[in-house]
Structures are given as C-alpha cells and as structure tokens.
Image (tube, one colour):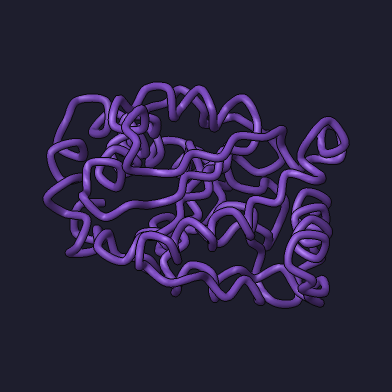
Length: 226
C-alpha cells in the first residue's frame, strides 16, 4: 500500500503504514480476498480520498464511517458513489440540507469528486468493507491510518473545517488533540442517515458555516455544486 500512497501524504502516513497494525491489516486483507471474499472498494481506489485531495490542499474534512457495502457503490470517497449509481439515502439528505443551506438543488448523481478536487477530504474511518457486511472492517487497523491523516490536517497552520456527522466521526475527532485549538472550525451534528437526520442534521447549515469561516481565514469558499 505504501507504493500507492500519494506523495503529499507520505511524510505523515508512511510511518503508520510501516507499523505492525497496518502490516497486519494488509496481510489480513490479502487473506480475505484469497479466500474469495469481495472487498469494497476495489484495489486501486481505496486511497482515492488522498489521491484527489493532497494534504496541502485540504480545506474541509468530512468524516464517514466505512464504505458502502453494495455492488458498485464504493469508490474511495466518503458518502460518494460513482456516476450512474443510485444516490444513497444519507447523500439524499445531505443534498436536502445543501439546498436548504445554500439554495443548491439536489444533483442527479452522487459523485462528489468535485468537492474532493477543491480540498474537501472525504475520508472514511475504515477504508474497506466486506460486501454486504456493514462495519465489517472496523477495528481491523484502518483507524490508526485515518487517525494519522486527520491529525496531519489538524497539525497544519492553515485553518480548516472539520465536519463531524454522527457519533463515530465525533469520537474519532476526540482522539486528535489539535482539534481542541482555536485555529480550526469543528462542526458537529447528527448523522445524515434517515434514522437520525431529523434529530439535528437538518437545519445545521454546515456548508454555509464552512464557507463563511474559510472566507474569513482567507482560504476561499467551496463551490458545493457537484
């Protein structure tokens, strides 16, 4: 996996990849695939969030839990699906809040690469999942890697926005001491899932708040259209 790590992220993440938990994770993933299990997303796209959003370009971090576990859905970006794949319910609700917040109509697709290319790091807590088994690769070693990625953003002098939807994202952020500083904006709300969106996600206005902060800090706003 080290060979596929984007150059901008290597100083922060290569030491983690060399650690025992990540070496064990790599061996375990190979064994799972050799045993005939289907793992999403496919090899080559598991680090897509880092590929599309170099560390120095990160302005916003949106944390997800784990990849979608249905066929053709996961392509390495949290909450995103490729063109032509039905928009998942959580992303439908994200689009509803985006329209309420900034007046941007819901897109006809779920591909969020335009956000990623503007500096929105769409990072899941675990970067793989077994087909049909939600959460199956949690606590297998990915957490050390993605903790280090979030910490690398938080350690930079450039002010950034961290959007934390749901308890999993908020617990992850609690492990990053730099997020307690006044340098960054940390936005917390319930998850956009249909099970929790009405408990405070709707009306939280994360997109407008993020842009107001970024403009104030001289980092420029995100064009949230997809």
